Length: 67
Image (cartoon, rainbow, N blue to C red; front, top):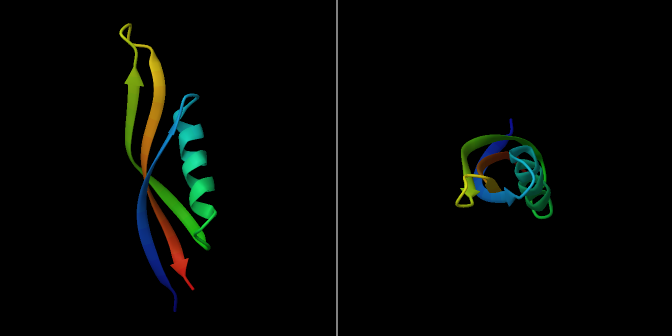
């Protein structure tokens, strides 16, 4: 039997939503071992006055196995 834990974090990217998710997972993996998956819980964008996307922001729920 294994026990899983879920943590929540925010990540951002000026490139894309996918890049923001990758950055969040990479940063999380520096201190959390056994990551099994993630849910994108929320997506936000920061825009300029013309409505152009300046930054993508995601809220992630990351699941990992407790050692």
